[in-house]
Amino acid sequence: MQAGTITGLIGPNGAGKTTVFNCLSGVIPAEAGQITFDGTQITTWRPEQISQRGLVRTFQIARGFPRLTVLETLLLHGEAQPGEDVVAALFSPGRWRKREAELITRAEEVAAQLNLTHVLDNMSSDLSGGQKKLLEIGRALMGRPKLILLDEPVAGVNPTLSGEIAERIAALRETGLTFLVVEHDMEIVARLCDPVIVMAAGAKLTEGSFEEVVSDPRVQDAYLGQRA
Image 1 (cartoon, rainbow, N blue to C red):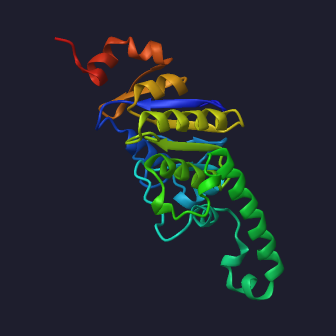
Image 2: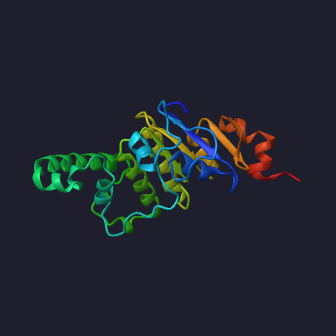
């Protein structure tokens, strides 16, 4: 994958897309092959090591923390928090207070990027479905990632909010972020993704532009349904 691109990963249910995400993020071990990210082989790394390196993921169902506000949720996912260390919290209050202020600034920046500024003080459980999806992306952004794996970012969202989420993702790409997106909404895939990788039966079927892959008879048979 090239930096600053949005790659789509599509395929029928059971094709192996979620398994790919789980392997890339270290949730399950790869049975074969190697995973290289940012010039480093990370095949056997733990999930926290991978995320600290700059590869993070979102989830299809944005569960969140219902008793936290949007701001608190974002702060929870900020990197390098010395206040979590008992010694630092007790004996270096200036250090963690300075970092907390930096993280608040970062959270406000992320909220602005995702059009969530007006709900920063709202409970995360009170957000609409589309806003929860944006907050899920915001949680990933707090760690200043290089690559984000997006798992169905517009699933269950009405068309208007789907379009807004797509706009936000495209704007983030312009900042240099790289995305790998699993999505079943073909309009969103066509709008955002180039290239597109198609999986079927646990293996890569083909790769190319959206127009190229959807015109491939193998993709039509495997993903869109075989014609009578």
